Length: 192
Ligand SMILES: [Zn+2]
Image (cartoon, rainbow, N blue to C red; front, top):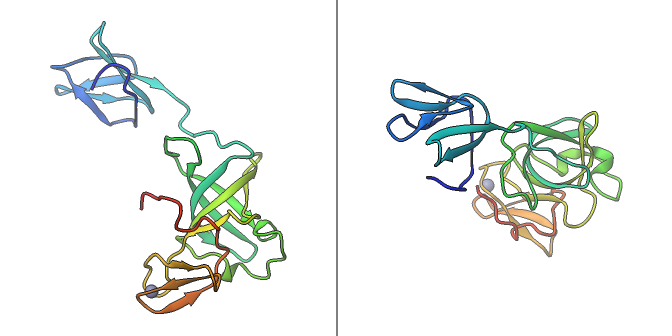
């Protein structure tokens, strides 16, 4: 690995050996290995033959108006806590635990009676960021927002979207389940 290739590393990550590189800024050497001393961008400087780590803000800035993907971490009576994993259009992952809350009033344009029929813990949700200060607030109002991958409440397998019925279906359990389903369900490629 060399040149302009960029990689994000965490403190303690092994980034090379002292046979290949010298420990530059943001790294340290221990027993012939070079480790990152801070979170940041790994750089191999061909001129000085140093491995360096340039510090970057560990928290990917989530901005108002961003579209995010995240998993439902917790469901309370009037809100859902979502762990933000990805920002749409941003190639690098959200590395740290960044959470946003989705209030029951922000689930859809219509009135939502109960969150129980809309989200299950573990579901992957596409949502819009409506506020970032003092905390990240999300909305799933709109047809393309909502659950993009829902898991079966019985067997935890990913469920299929039955467009006609507007329900999710588990082929394994032959079970149907309600959700706030995004119209892009199954059209989105997810890593897992
Ligand atoms: Zn099932």
